[in-house]
Length: 308
Image (tube, rainbow, N blue to C red; front, side, top):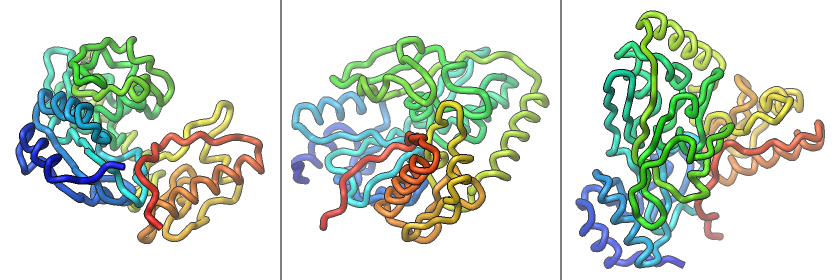
């Protein structure tokens, strides 16, 4: 069991400035669901070297270590997260050179899509409504409306589990439907290089406007949520299975299966993470009983259960 000490704080301040380190930070402030307990140390490094040094510190001192993106496809349990929670939001630069774009992992993939539009580059239109970070988009090979990260990714710079800096090709990430080998390998994505194509600004914008309209008209964006909860099961649509199971509007505490889109679970009224997770399990059980289909979570659940 990790115990917070002044020594750990001092070791972190030797790596990055004190303003980048917050003790006892409320993680519900850093997730789209507005759920989660506290982090022992919430750290936002400013350079690749700082990321490497923090990883090496966690190894040397046996400090639990968790990478947190922008919290869009994530549920953090009510007990919070022990040790160091690393957020790369300060690493958010996006640059273009011809048809190549380099985006740091803390940048929003939506912003990368808008940057491509500003240069009349096509290929990232599908990402114009995905709320995650660039790093998170690689982590799960994010996709929407027929496009996905693996279609445009050339290479990535990562930090491995030992604190080493590596440059990997897209092929080395084993990108498949909503998955990669990044979690298995323990990589921390620092930047991504995308290969885009020259296009017509008005045509690219028209596609993005259409996708934005579809997203805003069909998804319950007025409430906190983790986005689409479940992966698409082979031969089915998760939302249709949930809808046909008469689960829309079902609640556990303040969590509710959205009436607007059955594939979403919303934090309607001050839900706890435990309530939200219990509702996910209820949906999985009900769909399994009614249709014999096992719904696999797309959303990731991390952290500690609350103390009793």
